[in-house]
Amino acid sequence: MNDIKLKASEYAAMTSVSLNTVKNRIKAGILNGAKEEDGIWYVYLTSDEYENLQNNKEKSQEREQAISDSIEKLKALPDGALIATYINIQRYAEFQKQELMQELSSLYALLAVKEKEIEFLSKDLERYKDKIKGLEEENKLLSEKLKNLNKDLEDCKAAYKDLENKYQRADIDMKKIVLDKEKEILEKEREIEELKRRLSTG
Image 1 (cartoon, rainbow, N blue to C red):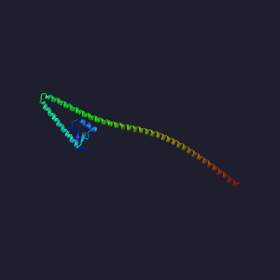
Image 2 (cartoon, rainbow, N blue to C red):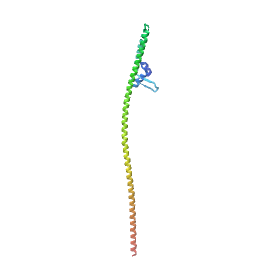
Image 3 (cartoon, helix red, strand yellow):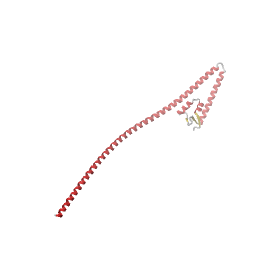
Image 4 (cartoon, rainbow, N blue to C red):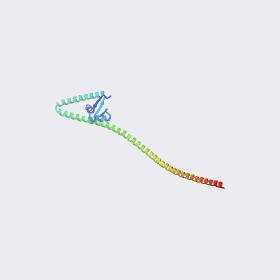
């Protein structure tokens, strides 16, 4: 469990690295931390990690103090000031070199993480491309089916219209036949009446 929350700047000061190095380590997943809603980067530590960090800082300060005391004693010797200045320059150069190496190491780690993210995103992109291609093929097939259905619909409409016309013609023909039959019946009825009249008068 992470019991301690340190500002990234505080962690950088305690470990003698740059703030950028701390941020890059967090981004690369080397350090447990995050940028919170207040816009500040934090490092999350357990109590044991924080205690070790403090102990290391104290030991580092003790070493630095011992070196500083030795350099001060050296200054009292003939040409000691010149030698002390040279040593301080070398120490500062070494410190800068170490800081740059640490930052470079964190950048390499961050680069590896980003490359992995790009690899995953590229695979996702390929999957989406394949899915889009499949959907385009499906859409093409559906469009073709729709086209065929529209053609079938038009054929059905034409067939229905043809049947309707045939029905109307058949209906007209039927009515004509009925009228003709009715005329025949009327004609027969007149003939029968005429015969009856002749028989009754004969």
